[in-house]
Length: 101
Image 1 (cartoon, helix red, strand yellow):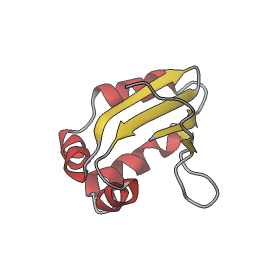
Image 2 (cartoon, one colour):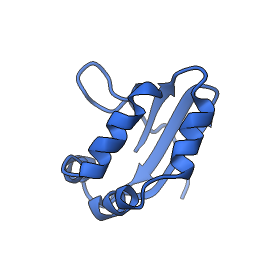
Image 3 (cartoon, helix red, strand yellow):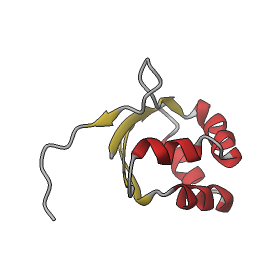
């Protein structure tokens, strides 16, 4: 899955700093939920994320919904991230156009 969101202007360095210091318990929860090859890229104020899962993305998200570390992380980023989800609460995902193995 690939997704995108924006961060607030002036928060670029803070966004990077927080990820440089990501909490070990959050990383453990991300791995335990089934995320693989999880990467974030930033260009200006736009962040593009990519991850892989075995099985259904919905199942991995359901596991993360129970993560206390993830809930705290999301709350902590409210002053940095403009909007991570669309109006219905879904991650703003991108459609795959082409793929090379």
